[in-house]
Length: 310
Image (spheres, rainbow, N blue to C red):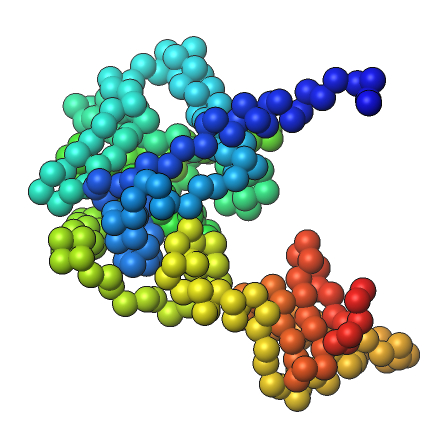
C-alpha cells in the first residue's frame, strides 16, 4: 500500500457526477451552425437514456471552460462594465429555437448580446496572434471556418442578435493559459440568419414526420467525432479507421521514405508528399497497396511496412 494518499482519483470520481446529458426539446442556437442536418434531427429525437455520454476527461475541459467564463464575468464587474442582462434565456417558439446568452451590454440605445468563450492557448494564438485587441469578424472569419466546432460560434451569436433585434454583437475570448483577451465585433447577417431559421424549419418537419434527412458526404473531422456516428454511419466510421488505398506513386514515396539512401533530397520529397496526402484526405491511418502503413501520431507521420510492429 502506498504511503501517499490518492488525491486525484477521488477528484475525478466527483467530477463524474457533473456528466449530464439532456434531450433537446428545441433547436439550440449553439447547435444550429452544425453543417449536418441529420445530426440536428438526432439531437431532437434521441431520448435522454439513449444519448451518448462523454467521458470524464471531456467533462474536465467543460468544467475548466466554465471557470474561465465565470472569471470573465467577475472581471466585467471589477472594471465597472455592468451588463443590463445576464445569463438570460431566449426562445423563438414559432421555429422552436432556444438560446442562452451570457450577457447583454447597452450602448447608444442598443442591447448588445455578448458571448464569452475560453479557448485552448494554441488555437487562441493561431486566431488572435496580436491579442489583446478588438477584431472585426472579417479578420478572423477564415480561421473560424477551419474547425466544425468553431463554425457554430458564428451561428450562435447571429441568432442572439436576431433574438435581441440588434444589428451588432460581441464575442470575448480568453486564452486559458495566459489569460489574454480578444474581442470580436460582429454585424447581423440577415441572409445567414434566414438560412438558420430555414434549417430549424427543416429539422422541425423531420421531427414531426418521424423521418431522417440524407447523410452528408462523409467527413473525417465532422463524422468521426460525431456523438451519433455509430448510429448514423458505422460502415463509414469503420472504413475511416483504417483507409486502404491503391496507388503506385504513393507506394514509391513510402519506399523512398523508408530506404536508407544518400539521396536525402529524394527522401525529404517523399516525406513531404506523404504528409500532404494524409492531410488532404484527413486520414489518421492508411494502408498503401497492402504493403505500407501511414499513421499520424502526435501530428507526426510514421511510415512502416505491413507486419512491422514498430
